[in-house]
Image (cartoon, rainbow, N blue to C red; front, side):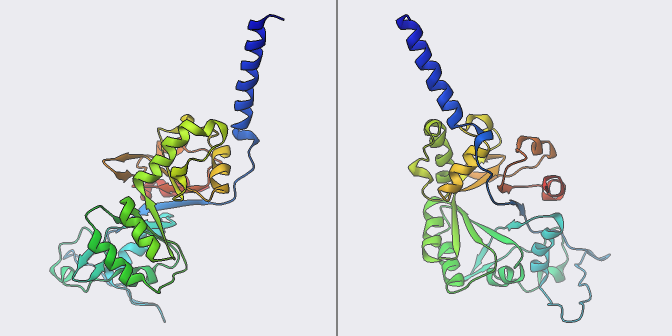
Length: 279
């Protein structure tokens, strides 16, 4: 046998070995479920004066403020989690007012803080952003949530340093540092071919955009197995633009997510995509 044939045979053997190592169809099934993360707040019913209608309460029903009801209504669109901005007023982190109302009475309604909101949304995971300039917000969040526990997971996402600061101070809160989570995937594209999970994934999250697709070694099942074994949570998003997460906003993007995928899906149009993505 010629030397060229031997070299070619060894080359083919290596390529076949890499293929088997990354074959999605050979991977174990990953336990878990899809978590649909939708954006709040949502408009509430209004009267002829464009003022929010306070519905009559059923017996023993909790009288939530309008801003809390606005966030809670996302569950009607099949969301498993809600992401919302916060506003620092004094030393309190307040949740958004209900949108699309210009009624003076509504503008004078009492505001709810994050503790009120999280307590009222025990069925939903919570995602709150922290940007590089939000150090005061991070401190207020730590003060508000210290010693508190909730049935579902609380997340902070955005700036690497501030999300880590809050998560380190609050054992019941997880961090989704956006640039670090993207670095995890970018590094995996270089080292995943031999099954390696890069050091940049050690922070525990990975953000996959719809454009990543088949550029990821072992996608989807082998990748999910590897990340699950290394306690790395996966988030599928549309794209990252100027450091901000852009969620799915088109029903056609459903076809870009494999049927076997389990993990978090970031959605900007939960009203139209929520039902489509339920499996």
